[in-house]
Structure formats: C-alpha cells, structure tokens
Amino acid sequence: MKVTVTVTDCPAQDARTVLEVLAKGFPSSDRGPGDMPQDTPGAGPTVWTSVFDVPDDAHTDGAAGPSSLSGPVTVTLQGTPEGVELVRDALNAGFSLVDEGEASGDQEREVRLRLAGRDG
Image 1 (tube, rainbow, N blue to C red):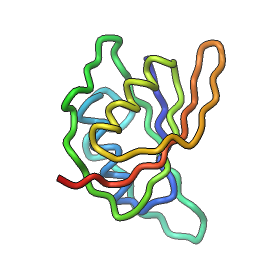
Image 2 (cartoon, one colour; image 1 turned 135 degrees about the horizontal axis):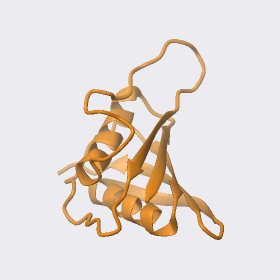
Image 3 (cartoon, rainbow, N blue to C red; image 1 turned 90 degrees about the horizontal axis):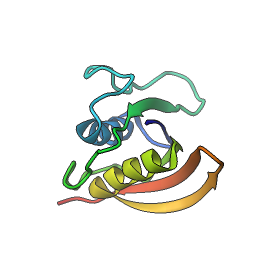
Image 4 (cartoon, one colour; image 1 turned 180 degrees about the vertical axis):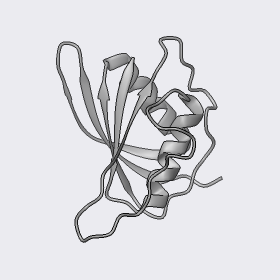
C-alpha cells in the first residue's frame, strides 16, 4: 500500500524529524537515507512530500519514541484506508496529534493532522 505524506507549515528541520520517524517504521519510500528536506530560498510556503510503501503486515508499536518539534506541523496523509491508518498510528507513537479533518472515497482516504512534539 502506498501512502503519500505531505508536510507543511514548518521549518525544514521539523519536516526532517517527521519523515525520519516514518522512515523508521516504513523504510521503503521514494526518498533515500540522505534525501531529506532542505530549506529553500524565497518567500512562498514550502511543502515536503514523500511516498511510503506500507506493508499489509506493518506493525507500528514502538516504531518511534517521543520526538521534538520546534512548533506545530501540518501533515496530510493520502492512500488506502488501511495504509493511512498505519501511518497515522506511527505518527501518534512519536508525536502528539490532532485530527483536523478527513475525506474518504471508495478506495482512498485523506487525513489532515496537526502534530506537536512529545518529548521524553
């Protein structure tokens, strides 16, 4: 199952932290280990996107411990309902999260989350 993860409204370091947490639980993605978010020049908003391959038998228990963020981060997950739920669970293991809305279709689900750090 493929899940597209979009990270916005944050500095590059926070986007990096979110994607690193997900890479621990779902190592197969469209990004290599060194391909992490970088700051980009300009005044416009920056969006970081990665596609994770979520196996049917994925387990998110203990995939990541509590993580720090400099401020709130907006994350959108899009994919199969099962895949989106597994990625959401992985994020919940590392961050405090608030559901900000969702849309569902026959084969796909989109969820918008607001993450905050959850230190030690």
